[in-house]
Image (cartoon, rainbow, N blue to C red; front, side):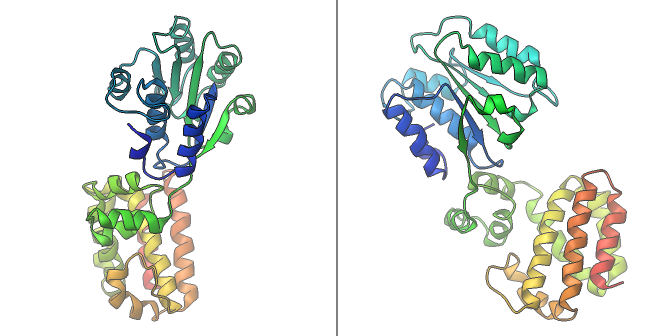
Length: 325
């Protein structure tokens, strides 16, 4: 994978490519940022560029080393994933064992730790010793959503590389140019930190159906509240979309934000722009305080659902509040 194939993150690309050109690749990096910002793709591109025998600051994608990295069988590149809920000390010890052997012709050994914040204390301390006393020329990449969750001593021994979310306008433009449905794009870019993650959401089987359910339940809650309550139970809490409840809550919050904007007379940058004709009159039926209270209630419910609150009861409360009951 070439750096050119990684979407966005131009600043990160410059940092890494400059280090390759100057032959000043650090012994350890922390790739930190939200999921969907291209951290894993960038780590793979960096690994290929390090091992590539053709280009000095990128991967050609054609040489033997590039192909080995791409296919996950390069002898000097190792990856560590959480074993269950955590990365355990035995995994780090095995990594150290592998790195006690000499590197191949490349001369560089490299390891990538995914979800590095999930290392146990023992694993993190073992890794720290490994970072302090490498047995050969080694490059480490620690991928994490929260770099601050790593031990301060690990952070101090690695170069911090921040991955920032792509702007929604950039993501929207890119995804629309790819021919993806505008109505789905407007929702997805608010639920993802990068175009790859947004694209993956749109292409998920239930994504469009969940958006339609948000529209259906909010409509029904105003005119046929008992029907809305039954629909929520049949489709969302006990039906085929039960696993999509977190996505439903995210989309409902976006819908309520639109209602606040419509009440204020703002029609620019609406997420549910294609529904504005029926939403706008409804937004003016209630005072602004009603929509703000509904929004706050939904955000609070979203938090409670993470701690296994009763989803059916929570949804019924929200739908009744929308109606003003």
